[in-house]
Image (spheres, rainbow, N blue to C red):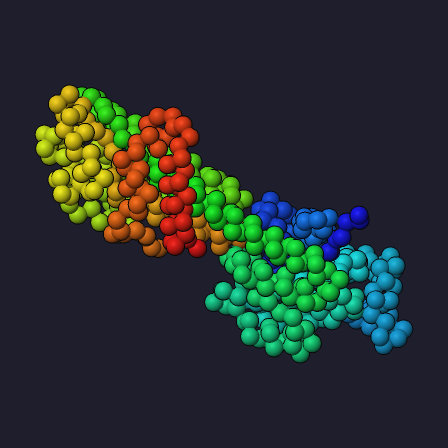
Length: 453
């Protein structure tokens, strides 16, 4: 069975975001060169996207059009008949001097004759000039369907309405606003639905592609929620009995493992959405050299996220040790949460007997407190939200939304269960497969979906 290939050319004026569009559609941040200057794409480049069952979509990047007015004059002078558009293009391509004179334009027009459809990318921040109209007029001579993609419509300087009117006057009515940097999955699906309406021979291929993309989008989101749920179960289930004299040292080790576990989840989410650590360097995401710069054990961090810690005395290390006062009111300094029996939370009350027995033996029961768990959940959900909407052409850092989740919420049931099942946590020990742990993670992922993008 032969392979069915849909060829799509990405065309337009120089520096309108053509390569950026391909990066986002292909989920490939390394494709081509994206810079804030014109002429960075010199040759035609292609990337292949498998669409299932022997079907492929090919996206062709192209040089920017730069000299459309003179090009159109040449094409008009070469006209033998009124309606011989493709023949005029071929005459241009067969003329060595003309090809040299209109180097970029010749590459684009030659590509247009070989593809099935073109996406004409518009920088809506630019005024509607005659040269852009000339570009579309020349492209229309290739007799290929064209979809106008309006880029940068979210910018304050966007002239979207002017561009829509100008495109309509050129009889180009298949238009879609699509920001290659601020990704919207729904808009991407609408783009391919518009292509399907123009390309009957490729309707089955495009149906397959749309279905595949929708499935992958959901699977990727679910995998992200499961990764976050696993992290939270690990935190909630941490419980370690340590000699009282070693509590300070063991607390610091616990904090380090929590930070490392949280960072592992960050990297999992970045990998799921095909981003890398470099996408977070110097970003609004509180990372510093691959670590969270905003210490999750710091009282100010908890306060900035709007997480209440009422009922705790001496607010300090969010993942510090929590002690029932009946065990002796032991304090480990500013890095410790010392709570009353009523204020330490349901998870700690359930361990009162254990803590008292530990006190008799001269031991301390280390746990991770609820404010820290809520803070970590909030940060991870915000990161997931940002990655879902981040285009692969983005040159700016990932920035978290200015909000927090679970501010005053009681921990969900799966995490309360993890509190009394420390064997579920992989932080203090190697954890063997546990049906209870897996069920808790699955259940928690479903709960987190209510807070997801």
